[in-house]
Image (tube, rainbow, N blue to C red; front, side, top):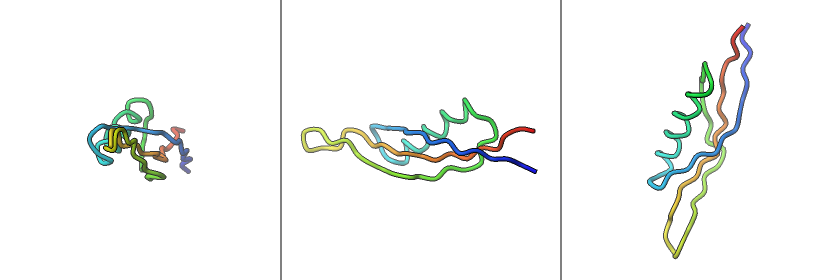
Amino acid sequence: MSVAKITEITSSSKKSFDDAIKSGIARVCKTLDNVKSAWVKDQEVVVKKGEISEYRVNLKVTFVLKD
């Protein structure tokens, strides 16, 4: 029997939502073992002087706990 846990993280990028997701997953995989999936809970942008300056994503990451 496996037991999974979900943790929520926020990641950002100056380039795109896609880059924010990829960098968030890369970072969480350095800390957690057995990462199995991620769900994009929310997306937002930071606007400065009428232009997008940052893309942010909130991710719910699922990982399986070891026995």
